[in-house]
Length: 478
Image (cartoon, rainbow, N blue to C red):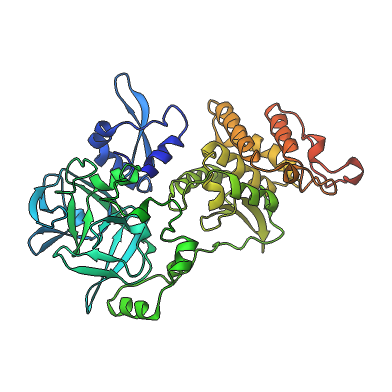
């Protein structure tokens, strides 16, 4: 059963691969998929296209989720690191009554890298008076609360009380923060019917969490029984860990920081502050959108959650394709910048390109559209002076990214994706600036520039300065 995040990512793939392969197929190949995800730098819930069935057809499974070294109780008082648990092993499991019994692991899998690469959450809790602990888990890991309900890690807040495996209480003492881990792992204890938690609760470093079978039902949006799940988890406007709203509401206290330090828990100071753009884009930078247009798009276009990082994987692949021709350009992804955009500038003779998280999270944008945006901003480093000329050059440069057999399809897809995004800009913001149509042509003119380049025609006049304003340094028309 895939998570909702996994399904969103699968659905964003180009047809015909935008179909979930099914539980049986994905379960059978999960360990192999996870191995390929690990080798290729993919993250949990990133989709992996495979060929399945007879005849083979395209479909997708997802990378598989505890952080590295999470202790799981295997025998009374004996804890095993989660990465050391294998399918068929016996560990302790329980239901809400916390009667711990030996149970066989139905499925165990995971991914690991040499350096921290997987986004997880630090959940810091006071287990006992002088015993402060931390668990590193994925955002949809479910904790059993003292209320008897499950609550996901991403919405835990200071003061929340976790149920200990011995029946006692543990308290969340600070904000849940993001970090990177070298591995993530999954444990399933068998099918979950959506109601009965017997055999699906585990002792994770002294507190009770649900196995992946329960987590998957929750992640795909089907765990809505308020006798099982906390209502806060179901509310769409609940702030989630790592976001600006969450960290603004849940500031770390001095006591929390002192307790964490005394327990030997290292926290990245930047993870305790609301996320801010990582890169300062200078005012003179050339952008794919005008600021007014970008604000309108951010307010109206359907977006993936900032916790869904699959688009980082996609963007990195596109940058890898563009880099051979632009090895003198530093290309960066600023996931923290929520304003949709891509920018190019030169500073101290070094050329830069930045793609924002706000752009990558647009649901309508696939690798096709992203490649077009990337070639647009790179065009400024090739000499394009006007926005429309950069659009025109971008189409031509797509021919260098995609082989001839793929270019027609990817080019058409890219233009349609950009057209669909432009539709979210109101009529006023979509108009040209008659005093500077080089810097701000109409969005309709930009589409004409794309079509002209696709037909090997020159840059349309609407994308260039008036004839009497052009000089020898004006944009090229062929």
